[in-house]
View: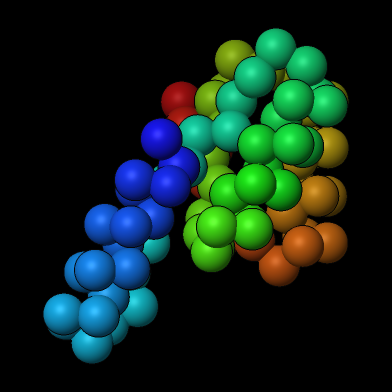
Length: 78
């Protein structure tokens, strides 16, 4: 799923000559799974990852710290 979306982003960036992005949803059942998904989204070239509000305050803060440390934009979906 992440690979297909990044393929589309890369094609759009190449044809438009602009920086493009896509919100890759990294919400999961555990923090370890969210870190793994976020790391994978970074590895495939994404600069934005998205989490849902329902994960809770502590998990939101943990993901915010991770995103800052890895120079990623974190989007909070409500």
